[in-house]
Length: 140
Image (tube, rainbow, N blue to C red):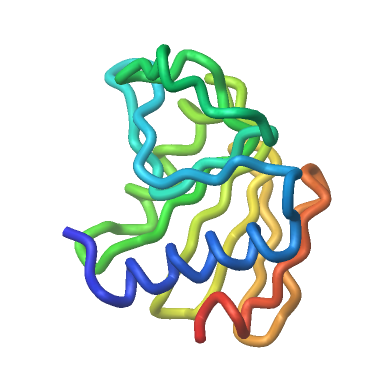
């Protein structure tokens, strides 16, 4: 169940992407993806910028976003979080971030088996999507 901390981090990420990359990405929360085997709903997704289609809004997206962001909750283990990576990358994502609030850290994955660790006052750098975000503003 999402908490205030979870929601605040999610909102801060949305704001940072919107401010730093206007008109470059469409950022959305809680979008259900048709990943194998049973689908998944990341906390945030990034698609290329584009107009919303108000006539065709499927309940499960079959087109992969560029990025999925998962924010770890107190009830989730690191193993639970890492288990989500292979289905995401198999679905076609280019990047996946796992946010670990307790450590004030974000792991940026470019494959299911390779990540870069950012924490505290680091500048998050996603080299696949050319995104840079100051973590001090994410965990504020």
